Structures are given as C-alpha cells and as structure tokens.
Length: 185
Image (cartoon, rainbow, N blue to C red; front, side, top):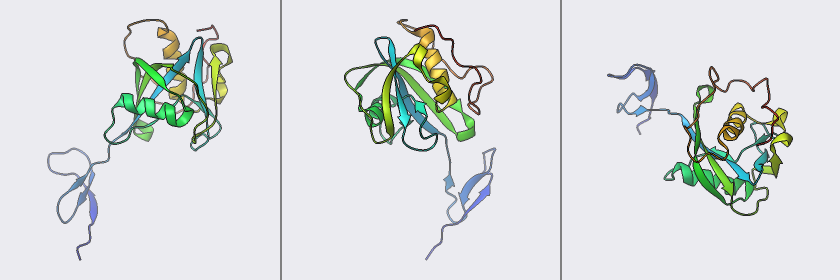
C-alpha cells in the first residue's frame, strides 16, 4: 500500500514553498477562498443579519459567504442572501472587491435590492432592515462590512460607478476605529 506523503519544497519553476507529493510530484496548491455577498437595500434601509455562527457570533453583517463549486459570484451572492436572510434579491452591480490576505480571502460584494420578504435563516439569529442612522456600527462583524456599507452610501442612486477596493492601507486586520458619517443615505 502506497502512503501519500507531502513535503514542503519549492517546485521547479515556482518561487515559494508548496506541499509536494514525494511519490508522484503532485503540487497541492492552497489558494484564497472567494466570498460573495451583497449590500441589500429596501427603500431607505439596508438589510443586516445577526450572525448565529462563529466567527463573530452575535454581530451584524451583510449576507455573504463562501462561493461553492460550479456557481458564479452572482449565484453565490443570491444563495447567501437566501440562506442567511430567506431573502430573494436582485443584483444591480458589483460594488467592491476586497482583499483580506490575513485570512486568504477575496470578497466580491454586490449592490442589490430586496425583492420580497425576509426572515432569519439557519446562520442568522435575526435579520433586520436598518436606516443609515440606526446601523449598529460598533456591533458590525468585520471590517469589510464597514467598508461595504460606506462604499454603498458613496454610490447610492448612481447608475454607473467604479468598483471599490480596500480603503487605503486597510487589509481587514482590525475593525475601523471611526464609524461612518451619520448623514442619512
């Protein structure tokens, strides 16, 4: 019986150590995970989900999660909204692409509108629409949720806009120390 054993080494033609099978030379590439989600609007309010799972259980987030095999980013964003908020959404445009290297994530965040009702899914303790001034800024789960909400506000009502990326010098390592401005969307 052959035992598969991997060792860390730099494969020929590469520039970094990888897990390489000592028997057959197979290279086990470990690549970033892709997250898809949406900032979902209904009139003058935004949909947030209180997380029922770790990490950051009990904190608020936009509906988002890991893409699955064989789905588009758009399909993943709609699926995550349905799983987390029992919400049917209509995607408008790609709002932002965020890189969070500390946890090897690339996040694709869309702008969307709510196309019906909503309710907590199995990954959410509660789901709620928040007017801008009522968003629980100190209870948001991740830095990218802050970024996405603020980027959404910057282009609300605009038909076309440039897709956003991480704020300058931000890699998602810590939560922002300053909340968004408090003017209504």
